[in-house]
Structures are given as C-alpha cells and as structure tokens.
Image (cartoon, rainbow, N blue to C red; front, side):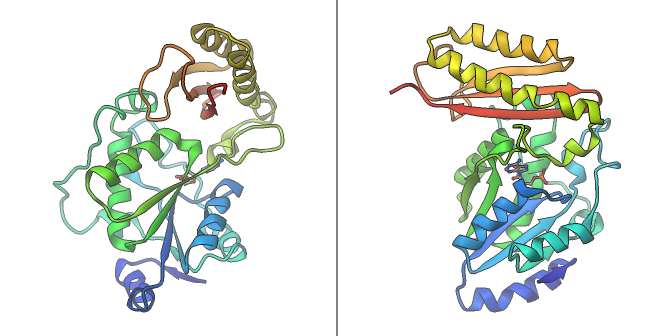
Length: 281
Ligand code: AMP
C-alpha cells in the first residue's frame, strides 16, 4: 500500500492504472477509521481494480464552534487498518495541499435538501462537504465512490450533485455498521464518557421500536413523538427527530418507504443515526 500526501504524487501513482483502464474505487474519509469505514473499503475492493482512500479532516465543513481542532487524527493506526483490508493507495493531503495555493472563489452548493435536518443546525456544512468531495473527485477521478448510509443526508447530497453536474462517477451507498448494542459506529463515539457510551444505544433501540410501531399501524407523528420522548428520558438533548422519504422529501403518512432520522447530543457529543423503514407489502 502506498501513501501519497500531494496531488502530484497521487496522480503519478494512479497514472498507470488510468493508462490501462483499470477501475478506480474511491472512499473519502476524515480518518480515525473504524469498521464502518473499512466496510466501504471492502465493498470497493470487491468491485474495483484499484482502491483509493483519502484521509483529510476538511476544515470547510466544520462550523466555528465545532470540533475541527480536536477531531481525532490517527494516520498511522488508520494506515495499518487500511493495509489489512486491501486498500492500494492512501491519499492524506495537508490543508495547505488542498486549499493553500490560491484564494478560492468557487463554491459548490446543493440547495433544498441541504436546508433540512443536519443542514439547519450546521449552516454551510454541506457546502463544505460538496466542495471537498468535488475537489477529491477531480483529483482521484474514480469510476466508483463509496459513501456510508450513516450520513444519509450527505449521501443524498453527493448523489444529487453528481447527477446535477454530470460527474462521471457512480456513487454507491453502503449500509450502516453498528456496534453489537446497536450504536452506529462513528469516530465521534470516542468522545463519549463511559457512562454516555452505555446510554447511547437508546437511539437505535428507539428507531427499531419506531419501526415496529409503524408496522403495527401507529400514526407517524406519534411515532416521532415516542422516539423523541425515549431520547429525552435517557438524558439526550434532541436536535431533531424527523421522517422523510428516501429522496429526503417530507412525508406525513406511512404510505411509502420512509427514513427515520435522529440527531441528538449526549454530553458534548452530537450523534446522528437513521433507519430505513419499508412500507408494508
Ligand atoms: P467520515 O470519516 O466520518 O467523514 O466518514 C467517511 C465515510 O464513512 C462516510 O461516507 C461515512 O458515511 C462513512 N461511515 C462513517 N461511519 C459509518 C458507519 N457506521 N457505517 C457506514 N458508513 C460509515
């Protein structure tokens, strides 16, 4: 496995693959990798000749009071894990390498679906994501790009952007990897105290209960209310509990496939999760 830290170096490493028309699979990450990330790499490994993983904590997607400075940076440990699952190239550029040279005057902004859910609490976040993903797509020029359904809204934004801009890349969504107790794996779980870590699975439990209740005919608004109550009772501060259709449009009845979304703070840590619920046959 190779590690490249410059765009020039990465291009040189990828040129032979490009010249021989090998398929390139790409997984953008911010590092501090866990099994959720590694599942994306495994999926890419199955489908592509060459697998590239980027590790870049992207400043433009963090708000001023968010955790950019403290975000865990564990490149050596990440590299070992990536080598084990068959990654070919790690791209770990500096902020300078990605943004340093010239003033940037171009923004990438996906409308509507970004003014909802996480976009409301994190203004500018999805613009930052869209920008860095566009840059990384142009640098890596993959055939396939893999994103986790854990960040369902992010996946939807990237799919929309790829369609709207005719970016010649196939975006593949990969299911959420969870701990045994149901907590969705996240680099931010490392911020949780031991006690909060014990509490955190309440989110997935509430989502699974909601799924059962919906299938038993519960009214959607009651289901959302119950999720909210379970989280609040467990001591979480709810940011949102929402339901959308798979395209992120609002729904008021369970007459189609839906996605339940939760964002809540446990101590200082903001956790997000979602569950896709199929309409009963
Ligand atoms: P991040 O490093 O948090 O930016 O995540 C990089 C990619 O890994 C994104 O596409 C995430 O959606 C995905 N990812 C993170 N956690 C999980 C998880 N628990 N299951 C599946 N994908 C995940």
